[in-house]
Image (cartoon, rainbow, N blue to C red; front, side):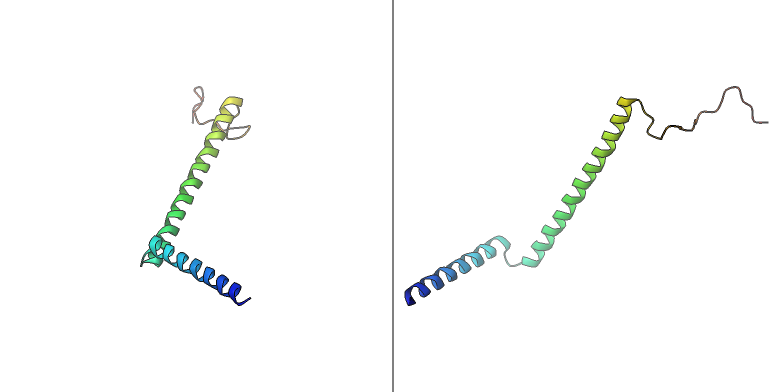
Length: 89
């Protein structure tokens, strides 16, 4: 049993060492800075994706209202153009 415990302990220490070496290689000495940079990048990417989704929804709404011939402002849209025959006296 002692040999199996030693083997498992050795394997675990080797895996911990490899993980630490990999983290040191990938992250370097400025671990905090890179994690902040990665978070900022994720925020920017999320904002861009949200903007694209919003633009897609607005575009879909515009196109669907154009195809069906509906007014996007509701059933009774107010007229903006003044009447030709009316006078304001």
